[in-house]
Amino acid sequence: EVQLVQSGAEVKKPGATVKISCKFSGDTFIGYYMFWVQQAPGKGPQWMGLIDPENGETIYAEKLQGRVTITADTSTDTAYMELSSLRSEDSAVYYCATVRSNSPGGYYYYYYMDVWGKGTTVTVSS
Amino acid sequence: EIVLMQSPGTLSLSPGERATLSCRASQSVRSGFLAWYQQKPGQPPRLLIYGASSRATGIPDRFGGSGSGTDFTLTIRRLEPEDFAVYFCQHYGGSPLTFGQGTKVEIK
Image (cartoon, rainbow over all chains, first blue to last red):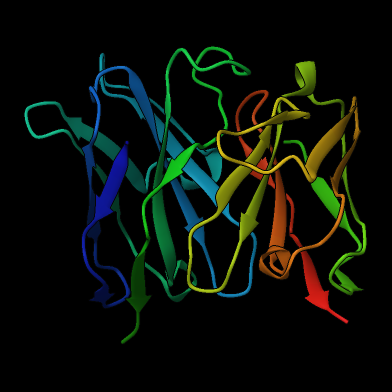
């Protein structure tokens, strides 16, 4: 069974950078796509981007372009999401999620999100 | 960007009743690449439906998805106590992937 374990809660000042980790287990990391999703309190989720750990290819949401960096370390089966120039509106729960790359019902890197981490709360406050 | 509008915002029903949730897209969703998720407080979303109508692994058959183009529906045939939650639709037919704002199904 695939599981995703995320790093702990973070408190950051405006302008700082946060980096969250997501440890994958239960299957072969290469062969899954990793997504990152932001959810502000009381709001719907917002997709931030994705990575294919096999080749490192990334696709980012345009509204976050330049502030978000997603990476994957295949030696530790861990994905990372780094968000820079933090502002108060970035206070949210951040989830990693995954789907097997040959799952039915998707195409290219565009898929639904099958397994989710429990989330990491990021608070941005001066 | 495809904007997904979910309705109603809140649905007040009793256990055993049927729930019908709507998700309308601002433009046609390619090949029915639409998913539904359930989220309970303090938990991550849980995948229910992908490809507009295919149930994810382990999802009971009281959950059903339908629709195409711009109009999609999630139906919960007979509400169980554990079904009271917030439901989101999501399109994944291209970038950016987007989610609806959610429908809360609450106990009447």
